[in-house]
Amino acid sequence: MGDAEKNPNPIYIIPDLLEEIFLALPLKSIFKFKTVSKQWRSILESRMFAERRLKLQNQLKPKILAVGDHRSEPRFRGDSEEIEMVYLNCDDAATRPSLTCDGLVCLPVPGWVTVLNPSSGELIRFPSGPDPVTRRYSNLIFHKTWWNIFPAYWAMGFGRDIVNGSYKVVRMFFEPSFLCEILDVEIGEWRKVNPPPYRVEPRRKSAFVKGSVFWLEMRASHNLLALDLHTEEFRDVTIPPVLLGANQLVNFEDRLAIAAPYTEPEWKVEIWILDEQEETWSMAYSIGLANCGVASRLPWNVWFRPVAVSKQGNIFFHDNEKRMFKYHPETDVVRCIAREICVVSDFVENVVSLRPSIGSKTSEYRSGFHYQDLVHNQDHISKIDQKFSWIKLPLPNILLTTGLVSLFIFRYFAVSSRS
Image (cartoon, rainbow, N blue to C red; front, side):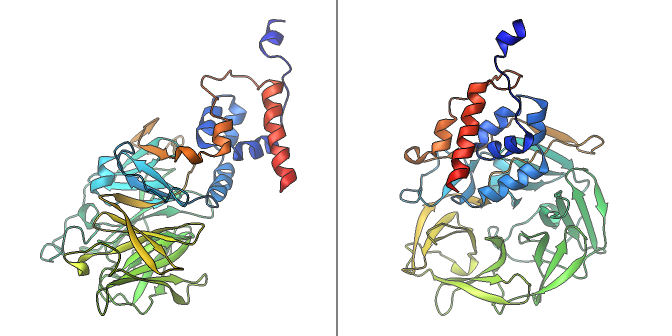
C-alpha cells in the first residue's frame, strides 16, 4: 500500500519510444534524467543516442566556441538570430592551441593531454610522457601569433574513428627518426603505429574531416598528409593552387577546406573546399578585406579560419589578432563583429560520456566542471527550453507518474503527426 501511494499509476515505456522522447529534450534535462533509473542512464549514455543527437544538433543554428567568461564577454548585437556563442572558461585554452571534434576539445599541455566535453562537464587527462627535444625551429624567425605551437613541437591531431566511434589523439615527431603515436581516449594508452612518410608542419593545426586527420606538408606543401583513424594508414591528398604562407586547414561544414590569405594585389582571403572524392578543389569564397573596417600593421602575418555558415548563408570567420568577422556573400560586405575575442572553433552539443572504461590507463577523470556557458538571447529561448525549465533535481528514482509520461508521449506524437 505504501509503495502504491508513493508511485501511483506507474507505466512502462519501451526503450525506442523513450529514446525518441529524449532526443527532443534540451541538454540540461538530458543530464538530469540520467539519475532517474539505470535504464534511462543506459539509453542516454549509449553511443547510438549520442550520434543521433549529434546529427540533430548539426541541423540547428550554428554555435561558436570561444574562451572567456560570458558575463564579461561582448554580445553580438544583431547576430543572435544567426549564431549562438559558447564560452569556455579555461586559461589553458586561451593561451595554448587546441583541437576540436564533435564539440570535444583536445588540449595538449607539457606532460599531459586533456580532453574535455564542455556539454557534459567531463574532463579526462592522459600523461604524455617526457617531451622530445629538437633545435630545428630555434633559429626560425616567426611572430608568436603566426604559429599554433604544441608542446615540444609535436604535430598533433584529434578526431573520431567513424567505424567504431572512439575518439583518438595523434602525435608525430621527426627527430632523430620519424615517430607516430595514437591514444584511444577510451583505452588511455599511447601506442606506436607506422610513421608518416614525410614531415608535416607541426606549427599549424591539423583538421579532422570524416574519419581522417589532415596536415600540411612541412615545406614544399605540394600535398596534404591524411591519416585514417580507423585503418591508421597514411595517404596523400592534393593541394589547391594557392600561394604558400599563412594557409589554414579547417573542417568547414564537414568538408576539408583551406583558408588562404593574400596581401597582393589586394588584401583578401580565399576559401577552397575539397570535394567528397578528395580529387578536386574549388574556390567557394573570395572575401575582400580592404574595407572591413579594421587594419593590421603586418597584414602578411594575419591568418584566417572560417568557423560557421548561418542558415542565412553568411560566413563567420576569425583571425589570429582576436577578431571575428561576418561576411555577407549576397552583398559582398565584410564587417568586424567582435574584437579581443579568442575563438576556438565551431561547436556542437555532444552528450557522449568521457567516463573511462574498466582497465583504462587514464590518469585523471573529473565531472561536473563549469567551464562552459551557453549564452542565449533571452528573447529567443527555444520553446522546448521553456517547457522543461521547471525540471529540478533530485528526481525520484522510480518511473515517472502517468501524468508526466503522458505529457512526453503527447508531445512526441504531436511532433510526429506534423512531420
